[in-house]
Length: 210
Image: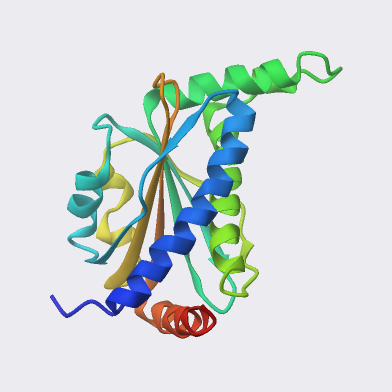
């Protein structure tokens, strides 16, 4: 495997600004859930398509099948965000959404599927986390709507090389989990080597202004 693209200073800077972006996502999720949300330290790793499933498996704090959604983001730096949810999260989020709409005339969330609920949550987490990250690099990303990869899939099915149109990428992983275990999610951000070149330039600008 080739040497990492990021220098130690660039990696530290990326982890620092990812922490800030993740904090914004955690705050929004905590407000929605009414519970304290634990945030992991962002983890950064260069991965190949064939090693991605095992690399992510090492990072996960749950081992059961996952519900996975995927969305693209684009600014000067482009990539993919994959949101993974454990089996309890969809059921709990449907309860939260129903409670929010209990006083509304439209109680349509009772009929929402797990995938529809988690699509809203994935959009909240990825949007807040990555927008918070890229704003510090003077970038404003746009996002495609989350699209479902599958429900109750093994990780190898979610991250199969045939579904990934690249050979090597930078993986940024963050984990959000409530203390009582009713909600758990991992956000995987993947950027190809071309995108990382733009990221490196942006990080150098960030470091120069410190």
